[in-house]
Image (cartoon, rainbow, N blue to C red; front, top):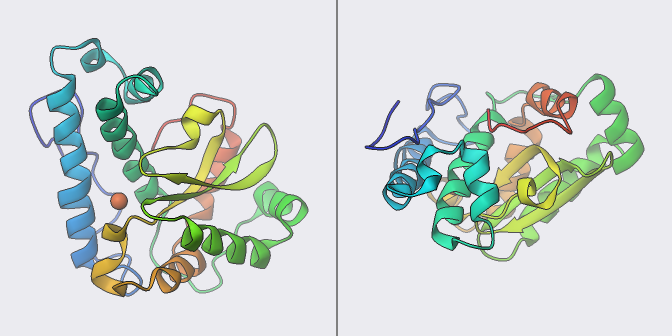
Length: 210
Ligand code: FE2
């Protein structure tokens, strides 16, 4: 779906807006994707018009604006972060868990799936203010990171495998101020471990949001 005048586009969601219910409502997805994500795309097109950024792939815009052009970086990174976030989620599944090499590495490097889920949700809760929790491959080691505002692993040399948006717009309609309930429900039921495994398989390569 194109959203505005300019080279940057709002990618389609990988599922229907009600696919994540009851964990995330169609109303939240409608706002989060249809208003917030779209607004970052629109703003990036406005800000980049007539600049060299307008002809760059999104990942290059992020790398080249980082630390130099805060408005461009913030909007470009938020476009990437949200596209990546949607790809990290799928319809709720009980007993949702990783398989294969990723499962083995979570066992070995992060103390097992249950410990990962507790630590990932805690990281999301403890990120003060707006930001993101991430599972990353950092130079061959799985780690849980958090970032503030629009920051992302791409500019820190790590490969993102999964993320959780903990800006208030991600959960306030469904959970009000209960970020811990949102973080636990998404971590338990919505994470797309197959997507994470594909990111891990490509670690070290040039990472795309979807
Ligand atoms: Fe968001």
